[in-house]
Every structure is written in structure tokens, then in C-alpha cells.
Image (cartoon, rainbow, N blue to C red; front, side, top):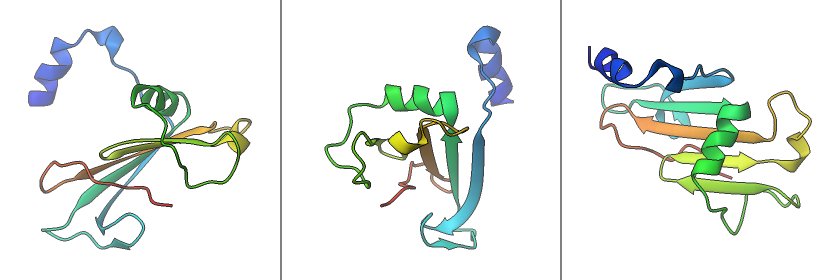
Length: 116
């Protein structure tokens, strides 16, 4: 019900469809996934393309170091939102931008999702 009220409060032209996203519900960390339990349940989203570019541009500045040694690669992180720009993927269908978003479903807190 709350979502309906919030949705109604925001003009319809402000909402956007989210294509190019995938998610997983898991326990443990994303790198060391475990079966979710009643006390350990997290949602991890990965978003590509234009939505990822918009998120990337919203959470600057760039980190001084990235997980990659490729010239031109960039990374930005704000709590449970991690985004990368990968130079070699400029021509890829998904594009060079990718963002990971992590949420602890028990507490509602953001959680790190991406590691080198």
C-alpha cells in the first residue's frame, strides 16, 4: 500500500522502466554466496547501460584506484552502491557502465556487493 501512495505522489513522467538489471537474494557476501537464512538475507542488484551511467554520474567522485590496471577505467562507491566504467566495454551491448547495489533485507541497511 505504501508503494502505491508514494507512486501516486510522484508524477508519472518521473518514473522510468529499469531494463538491463539482474538480482540475486543470498546469504553471506556476494563474492562468497551462501543460501539465505532467516537471519542472513541480502538483495544484490546489478544494473547495466543507461541507468548505470545515470547512477555512476550521480555518485561521484571517482576513486583514486580501481580494481583494474586498464587506462581509463573508473570506479565510484557510496556505501552499498558501487559503479564502474570499463573502457574495453565501450562497444559492448551492455555498455561500459555497471552498478551493483546491495541491501540487507533483515535490517534495510546498504551492504557492499563488489570486491576486486
